[in-house]
Amino acid sequence: MMKIGILAALVVAAIFFLRESQDSPIEDTHRVGSTVRLMAGDGHGSATHIGSGYLLTAAHVAENSDDGVMRVKFDDGSITTADVLWYNEAYDVALMRLKKFDGVQVSSVSCRVPTQGETVIARGNPLMFEFTSMVGHVSSGIAKTIGRWRSAVPVDAVVLPGMSGGGLFDSAGSLIAINVGTLTMGPFGALTGVGVVVPASVACELMGPRIAGLL
Image 1: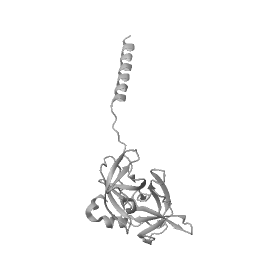
Image 2: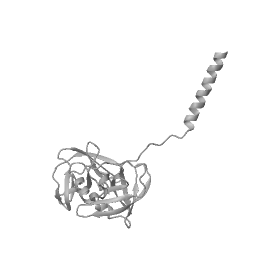
Image 3: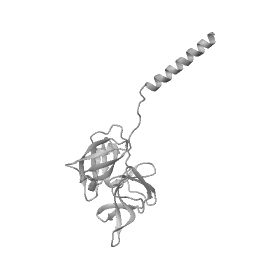
């Protein structure tokens, strides 16, 4: 009888422990990704968080802000705002800063020109889709003037409307360029499927030493 009583007591204790464990709050370690969706009016674009609330994006996305402010959506559905700090139309690069950035992942920036042939991932919010990744390769490792972009590189990764300002990442997960557009050709402007990106080396030069400690 004593053994049965001890066993019953152990079972009751185990049930109590499990119930307490289930009722106890569990620390939420989820962090939203570094790629965000930028919104202003009816338009939208993309950006990458590079640390301390700073967002790298395209100038043609940032210039559509509402009085220098854009709404920012994270991949968990939460929304905040970001201020446009500056943008450079010639190179199509802009820097913004989030109002709130606790729990947002950070992408390291590799201040270089993408290497020809390397596998890359273009991230952003194309058309009606959100937080999408497109895999491709760098078509040329030489940055030069392409259309209206003063210093850019072509890639065979798809860069659709809405992905502008999003990041191009290498196999190590580092940000190596900013998605800015797609090459077009022919009398009807048919899409060629060749994306255009601005190397991170250009963005680093434009940002200067002010936030060099982030990179």
